[in-house]
Length: 476
Image 1 (cartoon, one colour):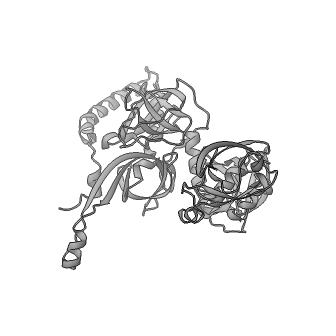
Image 2: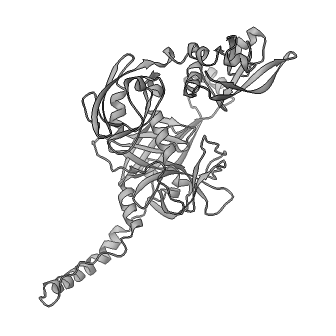
Image 3: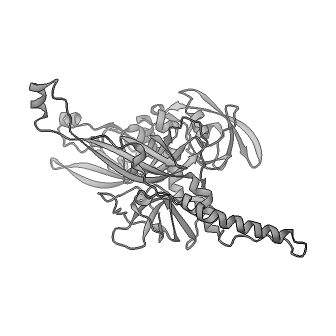
């Protein structure tokens, strides 16, 4: 059986030809009558706005060209219990590897004219191939970066013709009005472009999201969901939620499994944070830049600067506008990050910034993260040193393997010692967040201000076993 072609993945019914056949003669007749009236000297020429052109219609007209339909193909290898036996005795004649192919549909929205788009991570998470359909044409796409904690994925359309795509504008982070009209765009059930509208019901919904389209409950790292009463169907996942200005205020993600007319979206603040984090030197090259630049309109705005970071030491401040990098003016957020990521360790990045209406230039020197976020930092701020706990290490020292870090040194009278943390205690989480390595743990510690308390989840030796405890440590 032949595999369906990518074109067959999208089904769309077009009535344009029929409508044109019916409406064009009538339109010609109406136009001729209007011409007769306007040419008559007795009749004044009137310009009447189309009353159907509501703010909702105008917003949809601006954004819909940037909305894409997404089709994915996922190939799941099936384990054949007799495969090894057949292969051993019948190769090269037995080469069939059973597999299941699954297909799914979703939506997305283009954020950069070069073809970068965002969607839900769960739409493309396990996909083997991804196609997008925009403006009636199909393209293959590839995943650039993913943030599973926020359910956001960044994709790039593989366009061979150099097409400049239409894009959506980002709303400001907190520019949300409770009760304002919102519009959900997408591709529900693979039916093509679709629109539903409602109101913003809540800006601070905090409960876990249950998506009927998924096989599992989505427990994302999200504090403030947007709740809307616009119809958000499974195929809407990854599509834009916009306001009447045509600005992106969220990404559609789920519909409440036990409620009617209750949909949820990822707020634009978290969407922007996720994109900014995915495209940093820290995330892609383990190089410390130390600032977060918000995606959106030019000039780009600095949203965060880490204390004692290369960006901070160079003089970059929150609220600065970036107008140039290495003597060039970025054409978009993506072009800025691409040029930033071309730099390596010890390179100096020259930035032209605007602060309070005045231009200035600064030079930021990137440095490897491990040179700063290490045990020296933990000793300085907490008075302890750690080693990543592996299963062989746990077996070597005769303790159960729980993951996390084992404390190898504790400074006398340091913050950790004063809080009761000792040698061979096991550190699992800091402020309810697990850390994968010492660099990530160091970043969490570095973000804390002097005198701030950190909540640490540790395992303490107790009568030959380990017991879990929550310990508060004040950072130096």
